[in-house]
Image (cartoon, rainbow over all chains, first blue to last red; front, side, top):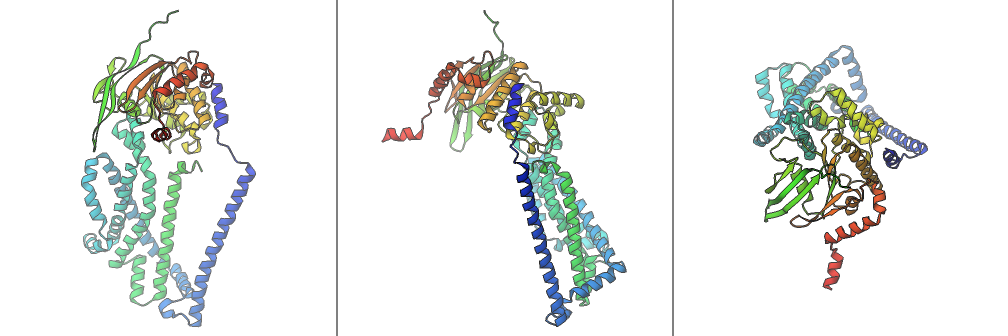
Length: 282
Length: 270
């Protein structure tokens, strides 16, 4: 097989010299460092101005509170456990709804790949359901599932199921027709094509949906808490707002922000685990 | 010295094909007849739009002809069970989330062959093609030539002794393509496979084939059958390109394809 060897020498992708790679890496890390610095400067500037305005009276603390007040409140609420518990309740509602909604939506979306006829029949209903604002369903779901966590989980589920369905279906449709033909030429059954190609190839679509959906689920859960609840960050904000406790409202908002960030990082970690093959060529 | 007549493996008999289009019926193929003999390397060349791919799909059993039939070892391909012919296309169709090894074994996996055995077969071929060390890599890290080689191996491990190829090296750069042609020839001879190879590249066809069918355009029909046999001794396609007979065949086929450039047509009008 001398040809193969010769060919290999010709074909192996040319590697740039190591020094060039190092230079490029250094340039890249310098830039990411600069990005971080600018981000910190913007954040510090924002909070600094706000604090300064609050202390000099340029900003009304009644309407806008101040970073130090929110911070002091945060420390107190963390100490007595109410903030953590609220975040825990909302986080769990979101996660439960997200998991149920994603699984259900993905299963339905991939299932529609099996039957083009069913997919065409269902498409109008999927669009109809997808166009309902979750907020409008809130009262019904509270009546059906009660004021406890169940109704929030259902709202979080409803918030992400349609997007998960559409993404999974789209992902399944994107599978290369020639690849399906090739597998058919090997004698593959529809089920084998489904498990070996359709499911894994739609995974990147499903995960892309998951990143959006964890946010949608959080919105669903918070809407549920706004309508009627006894716990959770949504509940905390609602009550604080009713009492004109701006510091507490802002604390709730910041906590939601951190919660959303934590949840999407969690999805990001799963993504990197599942899509290792995508990074192989980079 | 007379060699015994080889038996026909693939026979295309009177195949015609019409397609329905909004502008009415269009005939893609007209009464195509061709025969591929055992362990022969047969090429089909033709200009783009001559129905090569249609013919390929019909022979592969993926498309039913409007008229005529395709026999493989004397039995019709249509209505028979899938997987009697191996086939390979221009796209490598490697599955990105599978390692190279698992890409090669996918066909065997589908047919439910024992895993250990499949892996062993796959590894043997990968090593043969100098890709042994890439077995656990993902396709994204391979060059185009390597990927196409993996696609070839994926076809070869299936063990069908008739292989159809539709412009398999078309998307590769020239040196890579010639290298792969050489490997293919060597492999096909070693494994005693029968190949039907579709291409629009006359040079490629003449340098690798035993026999070339020239297809003409609109509707596609067999215009000529040239027995090449530059590669009787199975020299490399590079050596074949150097022989005087190569240019003769090349010129003859070129003339039959009636390639008329637009420039010439314009000057004729002027």
